[in-house]
Structures are given as C-alpha cells and as structure tokens.
Image (cartoon, rainbow over all chains, first blue to last red; front, side, top):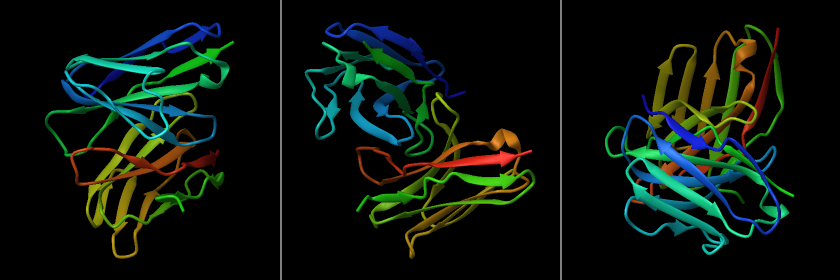
Length: 117
Length: 112
C-alpha cells in the first residue's frame, strides 16, 4: 500500500516551453501533497504544499507564477513549470500524506528528472 | 545554522558491519522523526518513523531519538551491499503544515 506515482519519469524540453508533471496516489486518498526539488548530491527542498481543492502554499523564494500547482482531486496533483529555463533543470519529487494513518507519514513518488536545454 | 545537520559522508563499511547514522537538530518543536533511504535517481523510501523520544526497531534497523540532546540515530545491523544508498533524516513539528525538514543525507557504501 501507500504507492505514489509520477509521470513522466524523465523529460527534456526546450527553454521557454512549459512542462507538466503529474503526481498520483494509487491506493489511498491524499489530503495533502508536497512538491520538492532536489539538486545533485543535495537534500530535498520543499517548494510547495497543496491541499485538495485549495490553493497551494509556496515556500519562501519559490515563484508561484512559475511553478503552478493544481490539486484537483484526492489522488492527483500536478506541477507545471512555465517558461522553463536551464536553471530549472532538477529532480522534482512529490509526496503525499493520507487522511488516516500516522500523523505525518509522507510517501514519496519516484521523481521526475527535468532537463531544460 | 541549518535546522537539521547531517554528515554527508560518504561512509564506507564492509559487509556485515553495524552502521550508525546520525542527525542533530536545533528546533525543540520537532516531535516526529523519520529516516528515508534514497537510491540514486529514485524517490525516498520511508524506513523508520518515530514519535518523540525513544527507540524503535524494525528488522535490521533501529531508530533512536534523544530529544534532550536533539540527536537522532539510525543503526543498521548486518549491513548488506544492497543497503548502499543515501540516508536522509527528516523531522517535523506537531502543527497543521505537516512540513518535513530534511537533513542533507549521508551516502553509505557497503563493500562486499
């Protein structure tokens, strides 16, 4: 149980284009989903928290107009990187927290590697 | 000063050794403590989850939390080459944000 999937696993795009990444909880309902980015050999940095049906809460320094987050259902959240630039190249990971179970258990997706040319 | 400090390693041990991984933290509000294992280019996998102080054991893994010292540990017994990965500690306060604060991760290499 507690499986989280991400799609795509790897994407290459040209500078200036937009890229959408999907995060799905496959066997549970996720009341809260989180988006992280991770640079090589560095830890996970939280970008934003999204609750189903409400606007995402962004961490300080994260541009909300550049990283659009939509949490339309209890099993799906999307991150859209708009007008991507090479500095946006990173490993993007989502996690999901269920409505029941341990207070703060988060289950992570396998990640999406974004390369912007 | 970072909220969570973790030695990045790498830590290299022979197969069968006992591994000790540690994190220190500064925020006394942290109540939930987790250890994740992350293989290269994969998402983190939850290994251990502990609330407040104390020990928790699961198979070859033991997690310890000492809130008085703001120090947490993960012990791996009979380490295997398949344990080679990056181990991340994470913690959070009891609030409505559910935010996790991660350590930088320790890279572990278990030599056959």
